[in-house]
Image 1 (cartoon, rainbow, N blue to C red):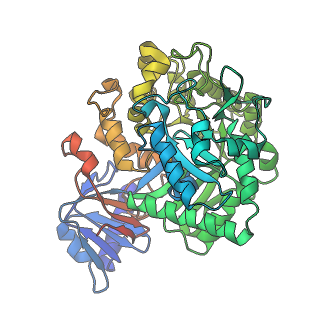
Image 2 (image 1 turned 180 degrees about the vertical axis):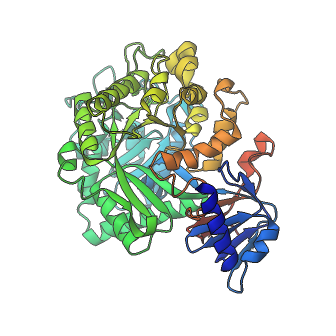
Image 3 (image 1 turned 90 degrees about the horizontal axis):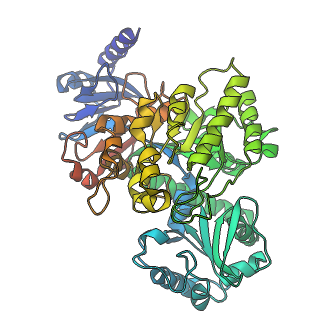
Length: 561
């Protein structure tokens, strides 16, 4: 049947000119039937044929746009398998703290922003990571600074600086004042207010404790008019689309947004204003989910540009901020095993809602305890509903696993939705947090998971990391750190595995493999063209590769000039 379909679409391509033809290149299809081609034809938003340069001459008519690839590499459009879509745009609207080498650098950035801000305006930033600073701030608590340093440069403007992981934040005294946060404030469930020896808040808020201040910021934002808020959201969306397309991404799998964001994106899809495809997880309470799930199950809106068919929950925090939930205490903080952020009993209720309404369940789990608890929830739900097959529930991150739980992914058919770039970004402090035995056993164990039969998908968790598939691809095949060392090289992906993890595997993880993820006749014409052949060039040349074209539905959505 497959051969007949290929023949049918090829015959159709010869009968009618194509709208777009890419030729004179190397086309890697991620399709075992036709793994490599030189040319590809598109009619409408679908691929109509693949073949040789000789074949391409027959597809070209007077109105056909022809792109000469000049030997460049064309691949299925990159699919961002786990990121925070509006967060990518919002990140570009605040302070970028990712390259800060010291806390003093960050204080200086805040000081410059204050000089340009209106009185009382919140100063927002993201991307700092204490483990990547050249030296510890002085004074400090657990390596984190005290808020006094921010108060000096921003006495009247609240400051909210989110950790690179998104699982902690640092605030100044004005922000704590706005939130009513004092030394008497207790830790909220699933969160921690870091305090000094005298019991005073330092300004560091772990996990759910961030909500104490973010609510105060939301109240300030709510004072703006609905039109102003809508304009800001639209600006963030447009920035996220621009950034993603420039990195070769044709579909973005969003890891959890509220109904309001879904409504905004659906309107854009209906008005054909989305320039790339978005697949989204819902993130809200069970009480809000229950009456709304059927209405918000959206498949292929606006010509396959927008879908909602998953629910996101979070059972623990992040390893960098010591919020990941572990079976044993942290090696560098023996009095803590991390944080359980969402009650497993509540997630079990979510699992039942997902089963009833045909949604995927996607649970953020980083620590080995968090992954075990999540797999237990999944297994119990599957056992209670043996009639439900091929559910493709996902563990988002699956960064640190117990050896006993690795085979369960393959056995249960659970997708390990991982981020290759997290391995090389986190590695400098993984050994400190876990020690060498636990790190080797279960940290970023892509090969062990694949050998269990699990599908491993890939992404960046942007804006935690740059939304760059090429940087993530390089991390996945090299596991090389900035100092040249390689983090447990036996777990590296081959280039074929890495490309598949960023294309077909991500499509499969969203029930979209029949539409995208490989270049085949009748599939959506989502194509990324790269300046170099990342499948064959020397490994260390991969990061120097550029995205030349990003094609979505047969239309050039980005072209590097």
